[in-house]
Amino acid sequence: MIKLLFTTLLLSIITSSAIAQTIEAQGEAIIYNQDIDDARYRATQQAIKQATLQASSRVRSHDAISNGSLSSNTSIQSSGRATNTKILSESINDDLLSVVIQADISPESMCQNGTTNPYRKSVGITAFALQTPQQASLGALHQIPRKLPKSLADEINTQGYLYALAATNLAVYPDIINAPTSMTNNGALTDVTRIGEDLGVQYVISGVIRDISELYPKHPSQKTPLSKLLSWANKEDHQRKFVLDLYIYDGFSGALIFQQQYNEVGQWDTDTSDKVGFGTAKFWTIHYGKVVQQALKSIAIDTSDKLRCQPFVANIFRTEGNKIHIGAGALAGIKKGDQFQVFRRYEIFDQLQNAQTQLNNANINVTITQVQPNFAIGELAVDARVLNVQQQDVVIAW
Image (cartoon, rainbow, N blue to C red; front, side):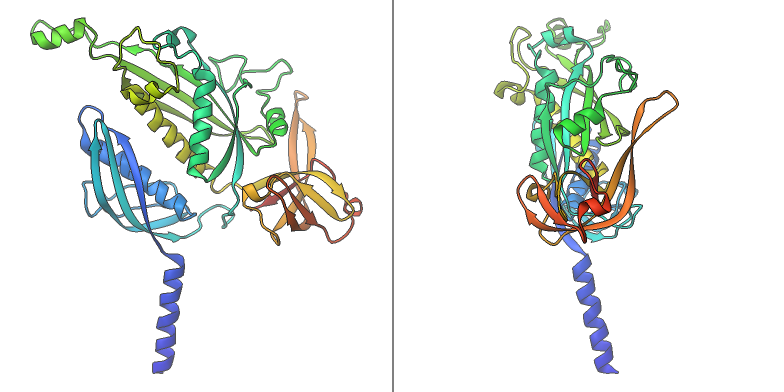
């Protein structure tokens, strides 16, 4: 009996250690209106997401922060659970608050299909149209439609959970104001499927920069102190908006799967005549540049979080006997011996005769036998022609 109890206890300890990971992660947030509690809350939420991604799971935390003022009803969409969450350290540099947290992450899959896969999904990032181009005159930010998405691609790749390709020469929306529902010349909502196919990516990210205008303070009252009145007259408290609508599409079907608006305000703390330029060394040192940088970091984390439970899909671009070549390899985390399911791609037409892509399970498995950086080779049980596996079919891992 004692031996049985000891064995049961040992198995319990081993199981607990296998499923629970103690993760340390950092989060940052801009302090607005000297509200440190609000900044701490947002920085801690970002840190929890980072801890989740590091543990290759997503968390839902309802625990109170034991070393801070965060309330116990923190909720983050998840595929796991975080417990024993603690703030280890906190620092403030100018208007940026940073926290380092520690949390026990228990992989507890809550995706609809009950699993998550380890592969890095590819995303292509197009140009982000500027709704009002005249707003770029302040600071000479005329390159923001191309340089902002390039900076986002760099941030996503720095995070390491997705593989991002910058395609800022491509524009998605002919009608910016009504994006993302603008029509193309052929009647389709966007050219996302064509862009996804041309770039060889699973997802396409686009966006519209809605507002980068100056935010003027209210006219002072008669009781305003002279110092603040002079500040208002000289525009010393020079604030600027940053409003971005982000859209994420499935590159195979063209379906819009995620959209969100990011709305921030930063100090334009440099002379109004300075031609700073977007993405320059000086741009990232001014307060407004730091606000934009934090927004890009939040977008990168949110994108990884939203795509975490999506299946991994890759094109079949060549068939030869019982071998197939797929458009993803070691960079996506594919290894020799991995197995995928083959899905056939069909083109169907809706009531307006617009082409739509449909993927049907062919009930065929493929085992990877060779892996290169950008592609992999897998083997079928019999010849691909016998199974009618063709180019432009896909493989999927759930």
